[in-house]
Length: 301
Ligand code: PSU
Image (cartoon, rainbow, N blue to C red; front, side, top):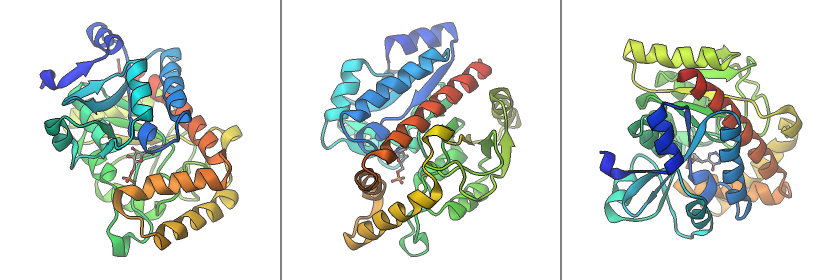
C-alpha cells in the first residue's frame, strides 16, 4: 500500500515525529472555486492549519499515485488544470490505475486520509441528499463514506443547495454522529443555522477527539461529521441566500445538469449571482474549519 502513497516532505516529517496532521481535499480547488481564488484559498487554508499547530496534507491523485500533501507548484498546476476528474469512492481506483489526474471529493479524501493514518480532515461542506432525490436518487457518496471510514470530518454542515432534512435522515440511518460545534442547530454552509437541530452538540475539540477515540475502542466503523458554523462576520443570512439557491437550482434543472456536475454548476452560478459574496463566505468557513480541524488533530495526538 505505502508504494501508492507519496508524502510531501512536511507530512513525512510529521508522521515520523507523531505531529498532528489535517487532511484537506482537492475537489474544492478544482471544482468548487474559480482560479485564482482556488489556489490562493488552498494556500491560505494550509497556512491556517500550520498557524494552529498542525501540518496540512492536501490530497490529490497524480501519475498513478496518491499524493498526501502537495508542493506549491503542484497545487498551482492542479488549480489551473482542465479536465481534472472529480473522484469519489467509485472512480478512485480507476484513476490511479490509468495514471490520470484526479481531485478527491470528501469521500475519496477520507479513503486516502485513512490509508495514510490521518484521523482529521477539514473541508467546506460535505455532499448530501440533493433536492428532488425522491425521483433523481442523487445522494452523495460522502454520506456512505462517513459511515464506513474512520476519519473525523470538519465541515460547515452540508451545502444549503441540498435537502438538509433528508441529508440528516440518511446520516442517522447510516449511523454517522453529526456534531454541531458550539451551538444546537445544524449549520447551513453560508448561514449559521439551517433551522434544524443537530443530533449532537459539543463545545470543545477535546470532546470531539474523545468521541473519535471512543468509536475506535468500540470497534465501530466510520467517522464523525463535525458541523462548524460559519463565522458570524462572514455569514449570509438564509433570507438572503435562499432565493439565490432557488434560482440556481431552477437553472440547473432547465439545463438538464445532472450527477457530478450539479454541485460545481450551482456553486458557480451562485458566485455570479451574489457577485462573489458566496465565494467570500465559502473561503471564510473553510478557514474556520481548518482551525478547528487543527485543534481536534492536536487533541488526538
Ligand atoms: N466543500 C466546498 N466546496 C466543494 C466541496 C466541498 O466548500 O466544492 C466538494 C467536496 O469535494 C464534496 C463535493 O465531496 O463538493 C460534493 O459533491 P457531490 O454533491 O457531487 O457529491
